[in-house]
Length: 119
Image (tube, rainbow, N blue to C red):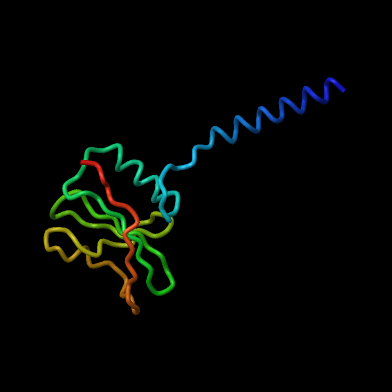
């Protein structure tokens, strides 16, 4: 009996250690984990001017994430839910993006989900 109690105690301690070791993000946004990871990386950097924004784009049955660059003449990238780069809709020297974006047939519903509030 004592061995069963000891084994149960060890099992509970191991499960507790595993669960507390899995850090859940402190961000309160509706975005995939890879986008939250990008935000965490942005927060480790210096504040950009203008402040970085992340927009959720919903169009043609798909969800994308648009992340603004940290300065002028740089591309603003559009990502899939798996954080794969789709294209740069705008930015760059011409301000017209990289010209590789899909042609969306419906209106894009844009929602600001995060903005760097640091000063």
